[in-house]
Picture 1 (cartoon, one colour):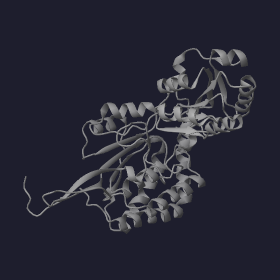
Picture 2 (cartoon, rainbow, N blue to C red; picture 1 turned 90 degrees about the vertical axis):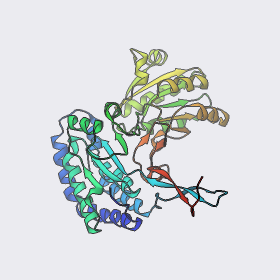
Picture 3 (cartoon, rainbow, N blue to C red; picture 1 turned 60 degrees about the vertical axis):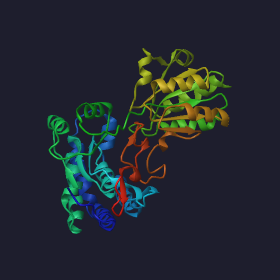
Picture 4 (tube, rainbow, N blue to C red; picture 1 turned 45 degrees about the vertical axis):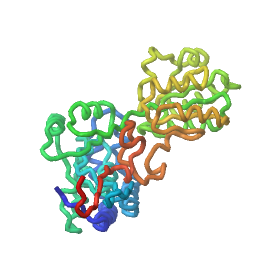
Length: 397
């Protein structure tokens, strides 16, 4: 087991990593181009996540630099109690030990997620997708260089070059102790990890996010929020479903405006029976599509009778990620926000803010749709467990 590195060493490694990413910027982008050229799939959101350009490298540098500036999440006192027998009891945060991150496509995860795990005192095992192998190995090489410069073991960041069969074997019977697994990717990956893992898994679930345009909505805000929700189709915080209150004044005019704006951006618009009939859209074949996360230039618009019906619909179909109500009525917003069962709920704002950096956490390891441990973006301060420290001078019970 690796002995916990001092906070000073952890921060210095992170800052060194920032310098190395800048130094190797051109090399990383060139190596990433070989990954992009080799990618033969037709998944546009996968391709988007695979790509590393200057802006992506800037983000990586910003992530590690910001992590180095944050407080140490390990050893933070959460509770203290003085026992009547004189013992002093503390509960403090502690690192998990070893965190395995399994992810598809995104080389920036090799920096950001590894950085969060490392700063919180954990050893990291990285299992990236084959499509980003060359990019990932280059970045891991930089981690090792940064660790060596601080005389820290390169074991702190390890890359697992496993195929699917080897990954399954490792999950079922790990060759080293693993304390926590974080899968970042589509539903198939998450289901695969859940099925085979023998230790706790943080579920970074699907998006399939809803916007509800309430009858008292500001229609300009509604348009802006929906359009912004479709501005990055590969993101798990993108909007896939729009529900429009049947009592919305100027409803037909609003829907026509919305559809034409979406079509200007080459977004395919589907409708439920009412919306498709009134607007000449393709109608949905089955209600099952309400469950679907699109990750595509596609959106579904439906009509709904009330806030209560909207809450029930979102709780049935959404991925438990994000939802937004557009309304000028604060009481209706409160009803929606308290009763919709998603990790993040918005009032007059875009679901695209469900992101560690945007919600003030710095970076994020994943966005959890689980309710245990931590829900929503998992930042540095959440990648810890806790431990009881009890100081005595011979007390026995």
